[in-house]
Structure formats: C-alpha cells, structure tokens
Length: 208
Image (cartoon, rainbow, N blue to C red):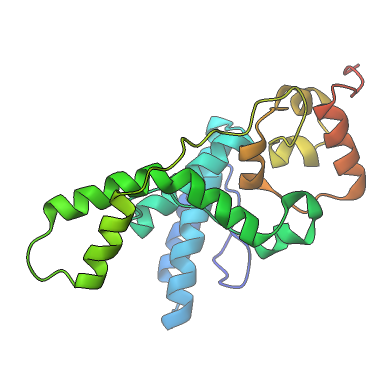
C-alpha cells in the first residue's frame, strides 16, 4: 500500500503492511502540503491498525480519537467538536444550542480554572483579562446534569458492525447514551438508519 497524499488512510492488517506504509510515506517526495498530509495519514493508519488488532468498539475508537486530539493540540480543559454536517439533521438541533449546552457543562470547570489563574497570576496581567477571570470565578453555575439514561435513544455503533450488517454485534453495541452519539455520527443510508432505530428499540430480529 504505497503512500498517496490524495488517498484515504489505509487499514493495514499486518505489522509489515503498516511499517511499509509508514516507510513509503516518509520517503515520498514531499512539498510543504504533502508532508503535513503524510503526518496525518500516518497517524490515521496507526490508529486503524491498532483498532483492527485490538478489536476496539466504535465508542472506544471515538474516545481514543478525542484523546489523541487533546494530546496533539495541548488542550487543557473540556472541549467539543462541531461538524456542520450534523446540523443537516433536525435531531441535532442548532449549532447555537450545542454551544450553549457545552458552555453550561463547562461552567464549573471554568470557574475553578479562573480562580487558579487568579491565584497564579503575577503583575502584568491585562486588567481586562483579570476582570474576566474574576467574573468567571465569582459565578455560581448550576450543577450540570447529563441527559438521563433511557432505554432507547441515540446510540453508538461501530462502523464495522453496521457496514457488515452484523445483527448480533449491532445489538451488542446498542447503548442508551445520548451524549455519546455525536462522537461517531456518520452518513448512514436510510435502510441502515431504520436498522439502528430498530436496535435502539430492541426490535431487531434475533440472529439466526
């Protein structure tokens, strides 16, 4: 599987395939753009190889992807990803509603972090910044309550289970975790959406 900066990241099935791809990507003639593409594709290939070897679920893969992003971007606090494609579907609400929800869930952390910054600050902090920290530190945010766990609702399923039409695996991966469903939202076809809804409602036929 030779490196191609225009192609999606591969799914190496063996260590030899993975290492050969890495070598091909590194030794490929690069310009400024392709060298950046190579770095990202190598990381994705490693992710795909590891997930394939360990058999991780879709939820685990989603968590790992966010953990990787936290590390490479040096993100210190809670963060979120908003995809414009999600808002093509009414069940996700609007971007403004999601930002408001995130802000409410982050408010206790922001209050605590603001106080830490005030305590650690030395002279030279801009008055406007200090006033902002003090405003955050003096808030009394309501405790954020996660959406209640229900018996049916948005779920997380591994891409493999859906694409392989694996009813048993689809049943096993059904989760009543509304807040997790956005991690792996994908462009499912209508028939697959019907099957996912059936899995959520427990009405998929038992595997034969």
